[in-house]
Image (tube, rainbow, N blue to C red):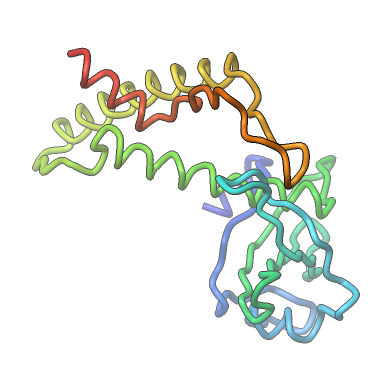
Length: 197
């Protein structure tokens, strides 16, 4: 797949395992070994990989050069546990940015995809099929994804029009008299559909 992307000038950031052989000028080296040798303490940058359910997903990130100037090894380190490392192999075609912040943003898209799969499984039963034929499986997936898209759009429109939360101004502030309602989620939107059908 990497070869196809590079041949067609498509950049990528792929998660790889610790034993991924990174090409270097002295030959292939495992990702974990290369990171241990080539990432000094001052090379780590604290950046957000995107918004999560509890706010920004902040990690320490480092970029390691390889034998090709268009390829890099991107290393993510947990702030809470510095021994928890993750590795990404990145490629940017000519004329595209290889800035650390851009690569981190691309690597962070992975969480959005995982959340979409979790919503698909929980809300519309994306994984609840025992189809024996490709055609049956495809029909199930298409219907599940269409239902998920509908629920996501409704929840997104509600979040857009929803008033901002009322936050306390000080630790001794009195709670508001009306807390209002929370914005709809995909799961709550599905539950409301079930109530009215």
